[in-house]
Length: 117
Image (cartoon, rainbow, N blue to C red):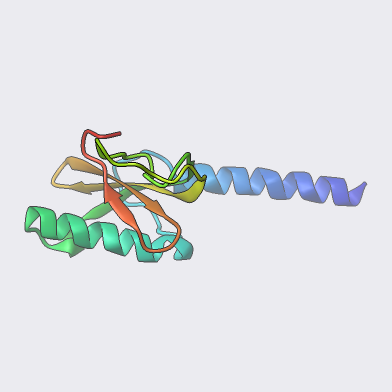
């Protein structure tokens, strides 16, 4: 019986943690350690793409996602992708009130998702 209550408490705690960590608020969120490499890549890409200082880019949202294929939810027209579930993250960055969507796998691949998704 104690084990059951313990599991319920853990599930509720994780549920609350996830909600706060992945909320869509406009303030910066804490970047979980496992996502640091792909968030860094996304910030570097945005900084290079827009010619801005990467340290001024704010992480608005990070959400764990299982992408339906290797396109990471941002397929390019005319390209084919492996039809394999690809675990990763949806990353929302902000710079001067503009928002930028990135999708990633869990390793080192990051895709800027302008109007493709």
